[in-house]
Each structure stands twice: as structure tokens, then as C-alpha cells.
Image (tube, rainbow, N blue to C red):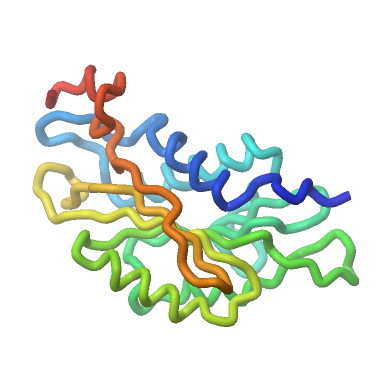
Length: 203
């Protein structure tokens, strides 16, 4: 039997990503925070994706099939393919990998589709709209929707990664076009009145 129709929607994934992103955050607030290298963010993103799979009752398979970063799989087959990329969307093939993903199904004769694909990536703050326009053009004719989780950054020597994260920007791309789902602070201590902000040494 397939998953319920409304189960594990792109909106669900976006909501869970936002809140789980703040858990076990690789860096803390305060002057010259340490430990925020590219590899830390790659691992952190993978842990967030695995936690989302656990919450929605799916298996997370990493570097699966066509070496997609992750696929979330039900008892029937692949449901969600996920890629994350530090270098953004320019000159990369992640969009095409997600668009042309070959879905595994327990029923070999099935022509099942993904529920949606997910791309998690970064861009400089002034380029947010340019990235969305690029993704919208690249995603034309895709067989399933795309959830874009775009983390905008500014150059900074405050963090060892050389980048200061600003916001999580989440948008859904489908046959209708683009829909902005939600925006949230990328750093937990930037959430007003939260425990993270109250306890941050910066405030």
C-alpha cells in the first residue's frame, strides 16, 4: 500500500527542516565562533535529512542509486530525492540529477514518480532572486515538484567558514510556477525571544 496522499508533503519537509536545522547546531553565537567549516555544514545537513526521514517514517539512504546525496524511501519505493551543495546552483548538475532521477520501486513494473525532490544550497544575499529565476527555468518540464531550500550568506571573518548565514528561504517549484513557502533566520540565536537568543553571549 502507498503512503497516505498528504503524508510527508514538501511543506512538511520544509517545516521539519527549519526546526531540526537548529538542533545540535555546529556553531554557537559570540565572537569568533569556531567549528563552522564546509565539512561541518555538509555533515549537519545530512543529519537533518536523516532526522526528517525518521520523523515521517521513511528510510534515509545516502549516496544511493545515481549517487544522489540522499533518498527517502518507503516500503513501496523512493519518495523524495535530496541533494545539498555548498557552491550554489551555478555550473552544477544537481538540478539535472534531481530532475532526471531514476525512481526505484518495489514493483519493478511500476512507473512511480517521486513525491518531490529537494535541493539545499547557498547563495549570497543579493543573488536570491537570480537563483530562483535560474531554478525556475531549469525545472521546466520536470516530472515532479522541487523544494528549494536556499540559505543566503554574507562574507564575514566572524566565522571560520568565512560566511555569515542570514536566512533560510524555502520555495516550491512545480508545473504552476514558484511558490514561496517560508523564511526563517538561519542562526538559532537570531530567533527573537527564543531560548537560543536569550542564552547567546552575543545578546
